[in-house]
Structures are given as structure tokens and as C-alpha cells.
Length: 428
Image 1 (cartoon, helix red, strand yellow):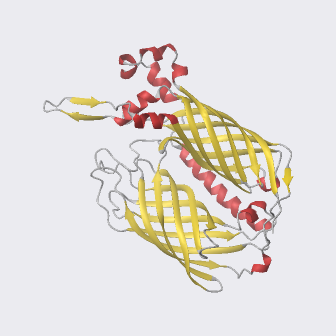
Image 2 (cartoon, helix red, strand yellow):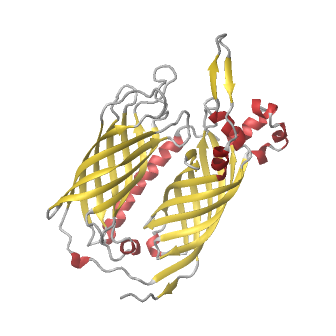
Image 3 (cartoon, helix red, strand yellow):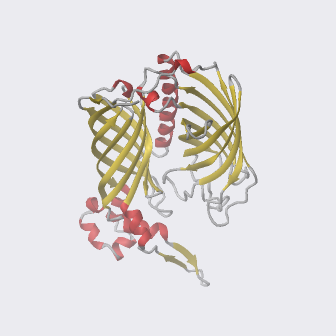
């Protein structure tokens, strides 16, 4: 079953649904939460994604954010995280070369924490993870040197430090510095990704003045719940520049762990995946199978599979989960071929003969074959703030071999929580 580009658009819809529900949930609960708006101007530099990357001038960005300062004493996560800011950012980016690199239109949910508050008041860390539309892509004939972006819909990420420089009753003028990233999650090659560094000036405009009397001190009792979870995922990726059509990746996983203070979810588990590209390459007896791995044809399904272990961490905010996993591939035999195809290169001789050189299975191959990673967003059917025993979620995740994208995935999961345990901690 092939979804072509639809999986990317579904991911965007998940982000939009997240934004609406995140703001709606905050509104419905809180008399103390404070709405704010942030117009922001950023300037920076688009980093070269590949050799002979198009020259770029000063990068220019405009962002407008809507969010909440979550002074909400009815929500466990808000108190435990020292009342962070959450919201949505809409962005416009000019990478400094509109003809060959183009423009980006982004939508990113974000969370912002006070950072080193005891040492330096006014320093904040903001992390945003979402999606972007890029109006200019790589083209083999007309735009061959921009190997950064190949699809219209891409993942977007930003991480910024902000300092509140000038404060008034409702307006904080802020200076920021940080990093922006755009890439398609290995759904089409080439996909070097666009990375940028930028500085910003912004004004955080509050809808009302917040007084300290409305803020409760966090409850220092430790609450914990054990859980078990199961997940089914449907992903998409491409194999190489030669095999550059999207095909599916099917995955299942089971995990268990602890939910601490109804906010922090830690656990571990096992996963199993089947790559359709791997299966077809084996089943069609392509070049490397015939020449180097003929035994793969005896069991195409098995050699197209992968399984391993993973450790999981997740931040629970009402209906939303921000998840980061780190894994260990125990079995992924086809990755030898994947590496050889993608780390190799080709060149033409003086006789116009094309020579292909395969990638070498070196120490870096061993590391990337072994370590997997996974990052994404979940939307839970029932608010995690209420600690339901049964919950169902839909998620959008980016899976990687170490730091290199492997496949983009939509997933459906189930979580069961066991009885709540509470420990009364002494605190002076």
C-alpha cells in the first residue's frame, strides 16, 4: 500500500490538531494562566549543506507566536515543570537565495523553560518541533547544487536561548540566539537538510499582568505509576538515490516503565520492523544481492527485518507527549547493503564509462548500524493530567540511525497504567 506524499500532509494535520487542543485545554482549565503574543525578527546564516551549495546572503526570518504562561495549579505537569510557557509559532524564512534555496513557511509547537533561574533570572530555553513548507527543492537539471531539500513538506526544529533584557508590566524585550533545522526524514533523496544559526530580537506581550500570589509551590511528594504500552507504526522512506521512490516501513513495539509525578515517563522495550525497500531489493535479486549476498534470497522477509531494544523518555503535557528514544539494533542485516549504496559514489572516466564505488564497512558503519534514535509528538485521546488507566494515542515520529534519518512514521499506540503509588518526601 502506497501513500505517496499523504503521510507528510497527515503529519501537518497532527501538528495543527495539537496546537488547537493545546491552547483549548489551557483555556478551559485556567483562570491563572496568562495568554501572550511574541512578534520576532531573526537574522542569521544558512550553513552549506553540501559541496558547491548555492551562495546565500543574510538569512531573514519573521516569527509570530501565541502561547500561555501556564500558572495553572490544577495541572500536575505545570507545577512540576515550574510553570513553563507553551504555544505555537508561525514562521517565514528567507534563506538568502530565493531562486535556488527559497522560502520556508513553518508551524511549530513549542515549550519554554526558565533556565538557571537561581543563578540568572530572565534566561529561558525554548524548543520547537513541527513542520514546514518549502517552496524550492533540489532538481537534477535546474537546481542540482541544492541537495539540502527535495520535498515540499519537511520536519522543522528550533532550539533557542532567550534573555529578557528590558521588562515592563506587560512587555518583555528579549534577545535570542539559536539553531534551526529543516529536513524531510529520509522520504526522498538527496536530503542533506538545511541548518541555520540565527540571532533574534522579540517582544513578549502579555495579555495581563501575572502576580506571584497566584502561583503555588510544587507538591514535593513523589508519585509514580508503572505502565505497559504497545505500538503499531506505518512509516515511509527511500533506499538510495537510485531507488528513490517511497515505500513502507512496518513496525511494532512493546514497552514498560514508570510515570513519575504524572509528568515524566521513562521506560524501555523491544521493537520489530520490516522495510519494504529491503524486501523488494532482495526479492528482485538486485546487483549487490546477486554479487555479494545471494543467501538473502532464501529468506527475503527475515533479511528485510530489524529488531532491537530501546530506552524511552517522554514529557507528558495534558493530551500531548514529547518523546525521545535511544535504541540498540540487535539485528539489521540489510543495513550493510543500505550503507554500501548510500556511502558510495560514482564518476565518469575519460571513455565516458560510469564507475560506481561502494561505501566501506568501517567503524562508523558499525556505530550507525548499532545505534538507533526516535523523536516525535503524540496526541493522547484522554488527558494524561487525569492519569487514566487506559489511553490511546496517535503519533508522528522521525526515526534515525544514530543522527541520520531512517524513516518518517505515523503510529497508533495503547498505554495501560497500574495503581498509583505516592511517597511523602520531607522538604524544608
